[in-house]
Image (cartoon, rainbow, N blue to C red; front, top):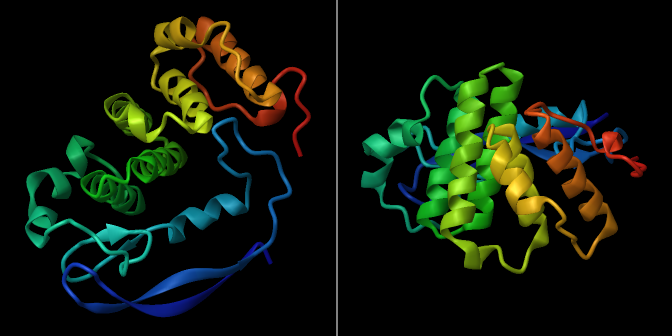
Length: 218
């Protein structure tokens, strides 16, 4: 099965337009090994096409269109929004995910904004748009750097920072900030050590969790 879908009508919280969208209603549990940034294996990677909706009337993008937003309709026609925050040459779904990230920043939902940029990067990885994927990861890093209070109690985002930096080519910073870093979780400490090792070799590629020395991933 992998997953099941159904169509459902949503009312846009910005302009009030009702439109039909496909949502996931049921999934099988993942069986394979995720990447170290927690990207799932196939076929679960295909879920991403359903992780964002776009209003056909005003262009508002979010996980669901009925999510309340502080974004005004005028922003949705701004150069920043229509231009994907300066990340050009992206596919349709990646572009919608970037717009979702921009909306989340406007709503001060910084953790979700980081995750949205990460998801957009995954989509762009699949399209082999490496520079655009790198730009999304850099945008996520900028949010982490710019709003530390939103992440201070969540070590998962601290560890994600290492992967975002490495995948975007900032190897020196990974080594400088994470070498010798110990997390409360042994698994997270092992992953951080692995990230530093990869960065010291100039490796910006994706890696699976079962490549981390001493880690058994299921």
